[in-house]
Length: 464
Image (cartoon, rainbow, N blue to C red):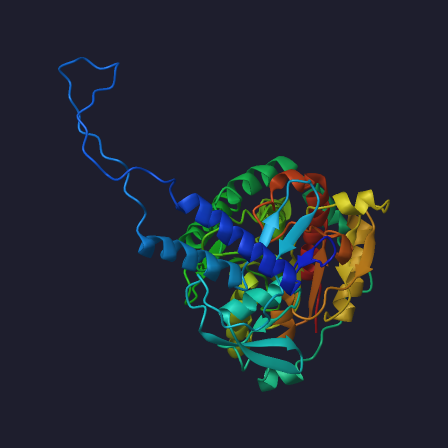
């Protein structure tokens, strides 16, 4: 998902404070590393009084730490403190995420512990602005709340004749298929969602470059197959370990409705080292659309008819946190193949409502209104009114804030919904504290209702 909202973040970046912090920590380390004065090293044949007389031991005083080793520790600490990734420290206050040192160096080329940190990448931070940055710079952009697409391998996305001239579909004026959808909605079960989310967040991290990310994707593939037996599921391979996943319910036409979420997680301090359970971002969206697929695939309508008028796909993208890399690869492939995607909905962060309720506001679905297709977005509001038990609220998240941006750039109508007003969404994302305990399964179920309602309404619609 997008970078964490800046509210609730404390940036302690004044130079004098950082210098003082550095000096204090270096002094502390010196005190810890330098041993107390001791007598010169000697051999002794004294016996401890508790041992038998016949037992004679030779004692050696601990050797002093070699100066070279001391300097290694000091150099490592200095490097860590001067690095731009001196990042996220979560204090156990239940609500507030504190950031120390973030923003000290923007576009810095300091040494980083991340593999490939010096590799240059081309990122797009607005429809008209691109820049070359390192992987370390990408992390810093995310810490500063700057959204971007990493377009290094997908610079031609959206520039095909088909993408530039594609006719925008006309969406239904009102929901029309409640007689089919309402029986399906009754099958939604928070127990299934809780079980899936518990296992999904048990992975230490789902960082797309890590072996954990690969393992979590393989687990998700198996869980989708178990949840929706008989449905086609294919991995979409990338140059990094974690695959995207695509489940398909074929329709009578090739016009395709896509429901998406991203499966990866990230810890913005040291992604390859620190944990990132990613319960809300975006474990919640992942299991929300999985539950929607379960009840749709197991419905009486599918059992009787085998499919809908249009093809329905569920996507779980890899590497969203790396700059929408997985979804760009998928929609680049679709663009080249001439795929006819009539609508794409992204579900990213669907479970956190505490800040909304604490603010005295009603629990609601946040409907993103910037950088989305207006016709699809208006129809989503009507679907929420028809099938959900909570209202919607308009909100904005900026350019490239989730994977719908990849579909949009390819010329496909896309939309995005989130758990609340953007400013009241979860602030613990991208840390070790993005856990299940902060989430509402009932709120995730409301997003599930929206997902089922929109998926079936558009899969049944007749597009020209």
